[in-house]
Length: 155
Image 1 (cartoon, one colour):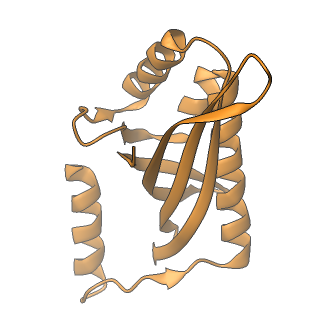
Image 2 (spheres, rainbow, N blue to C red):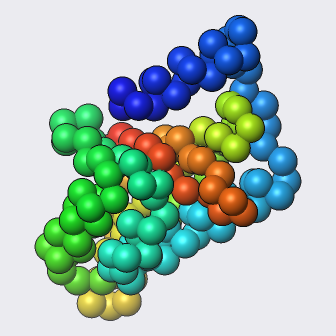
């Protein structure tokens, strides 16, 4: 969190004024939609390497206001490894990007709705958790990566 605030403060100083969010380009929107889909696929497959690979080297994740913030590649990888290891049954993670703002060149804020559903013995899916997901994403070359992900449970 401190680094994210520091990055935003540095950007405000560098631009000699407050940042103004702008809509992302169509190409960036498509790339960020692909990142969301890849995130869902990695979560659904319990693919720790793919999930952790979607974060910058200093990326962080916090899954609820009561949880600690997990920071850095090794910690993020360990976090998802433990979380996926505890998960029993078949679940799916469904992300819907609601709003994207470019807050600086190569930096965007993404707001999403996320549902976690569990498959029942009859094949149907039941909602077990929903949350808002706010992410700071950074462009690395031609890819976008998560710098900070914050999940806020709705139920």
